[in-house]
Amino acid sequence: MKKNKYKHVEETRISISELMLPSFANFSGKIHGGYILSLMDQIAFACASKHSGTYCVTASVDTVDFLNPIEVGELVTMKASINYVGKTSMVVGIRVEAQNIQTGKVKHCNSSYFTMVAKNDKGNSIQVPGLIVNDDLEVRRFLKAVKRIEMKRNRQDEFDREDFMSENYLKDLENYNVKIELNNSKING
Image 1: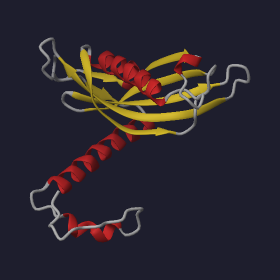
Image 2: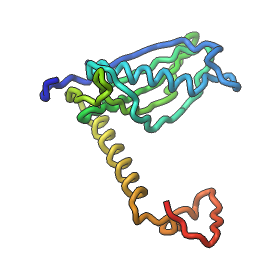
Image 3: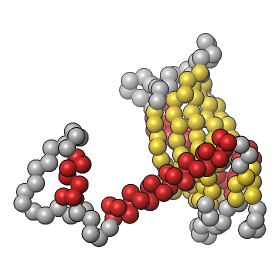
């Protein structure tokens, strides 16, 4: 793959719609979140593969917020596009909406970010094309992805350090619904 190859965000956009059937419902009669996550993984794969031109795997899923329940009989539409590209990875932003097909009312049900990695036929990570952003929204999405990646890396670095000591953080837990009962042993991460 050429190093300087870039693709526009609009070249990566994918939309899928599916009618929600009773067999997709959980015990409370709403569409099961796991089913929605499965559909989101499928659209993330399709979007990332469309951008990279190769097979992709899910590396991580960030910020899955279920905002509104989805009812049996609603038409679910998922919209996905590439928000960020690294060397071999891509962040796919996904928006999930449900429409009552009788009233036409649409509600935002979920947004999420899937990090996908491009692979060759031997399973090795390979370079992906760069991303061309054309408007302020696309720039903001790219920047938000950069910030999420930085925050995740900083959090991992902070808690994975060899000199990390849990007792230095106990005061931070005072306003949370946790009761700490330590037996005189030393705490280490």
